[in-house]
Amino acid sequence: MIFQAILIVVIFVFCLFSGIPIGFSICIPAMTVMLINDLELMVAPQMITKGAQSFTLLAVPFFILAGNLMNSAGITRRIFNFCLALVGHIRGGLGHVNVLASMIFAGISGSAAADAAGLGKIEMKAMRDTGYDENFAAAVTAASSVIGPIIPPSIIMVIYATEANISVGNMFKAGLMPGILVGLALMATVAVMVARGEPTPPPAKFSLPNLLTATKEGILAVISPAIILLGMFSGSFSPTEAGVVAVVYSLLIGFLYKEISIKQLPEIFRESAITTAQCIFVTACATLLSWVVTFTRIPVFVSDALFSITDDKWVFLLLVNLFLLVLGCFMESIAGLLVILPIILPIALQLGIDPLHFGVICCYNMMIGTCTPPMGASIFIVCGIAETKFERVVKKIWPFVIAHIVALIIITYIPIISLWLPKAF
Image (cartoon, rainbow, N blue to C red; front, side, top):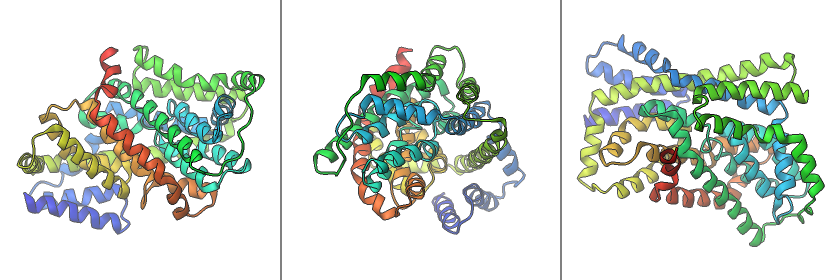
């Protein structure tokens, strides 16, 4: 058992660093262990197919498409303008605008990449044009994009709920309060950095007419998260149906604002289809690995080894946080979660940890990895947009990473932050 566990890890790491696509990097060690145990390889395509057939996963392509449509339909720009008129007068104003806009956009897209790529273009251009350091602007954008998959809807939470066999709707409810906490933590970090000497231009004066104008022009975009969230939380439609609502709403707004045309749709659909295929393929391959890991009783081995050290759930959560923070630095968030979840989730349940609370912890941990070196996807995205160097952004992003870790500790050890909303509704 120990040999097989080590073999899976070694082969997986070798494949990953050899440049093999993540889905195949998951399948190869799983099938190697199947051969060692004389298991019929015909089981592999059956398990992969089973992993792709979950009804819950239908939400994923809709939220991906909704995010792409909103970036093309002028919704992101109107959200940014509204936030600018609302909090742009605060010292370090555009930093706060950046975070607040990400919090609102998070209620629509469910993707850190969509936030960093779509909203980030507008945010960083505005910050650079008004005199902010481009590396500071890129750091704020990358750090705030983490909020996207925490405030519902969330693609990674859909996948966690599917793997953990729990309600997607309750998982979304569990992410709302932690997401707001994360946003407040990042805004506090901006304020501290500005107070400690981060060079920022003088903030614009508050203007009620400007706020009213921005609200009038962007009201349909700003209220879209409320429509989606209230619809899900009230039971008017399921999380999967919420994805459909988000797509239809985005199309209607795009046509209404005359910022999207029929000619643009094929390319938007193509990009969404490619992203969806990549995401679902990784999830399907992880189903095979999960089956192999369970068959070889690796979770039992890890559980016994862990309980020989401690049976305290709070110590376990500390160890999980440390491990996932490191794992997130080197692996794509969804892939990393799917690889490790079959091992740590049974232990969490055995210790009496609520799967909703544990899901928020795991998902947030992996999303922090998108803004940490060396593999931080959001950092690479914003560096490409801002045309700045990776290492320069990394120097500016550490205060925000620390803020994320502080928020993670609070979320981990105060479970009611995650569980209050699911229990109340």
